[in-house]
Amino acid sequence: MAHGARRGTAGQDAAAREAAVMAARIADEMRAGDITVLYVEKQITVTDYFVIASGRNKRQIQQIAREVRDHLKKEVGYTHVHIEGLEGASWVLIDAGPVIVHVFREDLRKYYDLELLWGDAPTVEWRENL
Image (cartoon, rainbow, N blue to C red; front, side, top):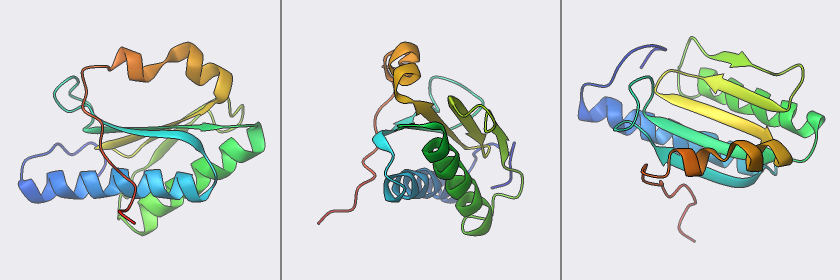
């Protein structure tokens, strides 16, 4: 589903969920901390999923954000992925349309507490069953 496209079919919904799970796994491979995937489609209209992760420092946050962005473009086919905050890298937002990824510096993650703000949103299990 292209950036800005809205859901409509079960296939598109499943694709967005798979993209969110993939983004969480890529962040995990990059050693991001405290990764959460929220299904926010019923709370807001601009996206279906939030992926929220933490990094320890600027360099790690930038690496996580770049890897997630690149995978969303290359492997998922989201052609219009917008990224904000990469230079300062205290809160990087990756907007891929149906999936928005937030990569925070740990202290800002606690301050903004998106999980509390979107507390009504169901969490999505993204780890593979071992």
